[in-house]
Image (cartoon, rainbow, N blue to C red; front, side):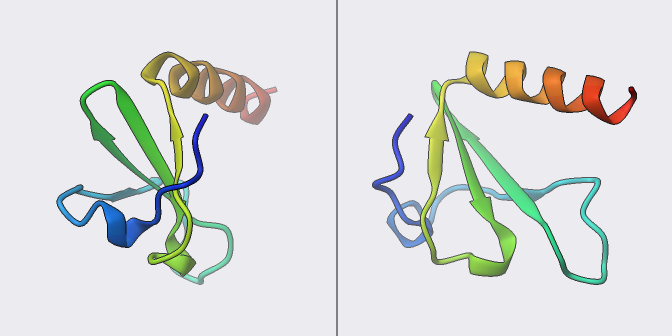
Length: 71
């Protein structure tokens, strides 16, 4: 995991907001994929830090989050 990058370091990325993010603000996550890396950021702080994880780690996180949500 690496958090040294900021959103301004990677302007060529295409960011996608979570489908579970509401329109009222609050807790919103955006992700962008590139070769071998998934970038994750807080949509309210678009120029802030970016968490970089492997696609495998991201898939594991999504699986756990989905199972918790459906429990």
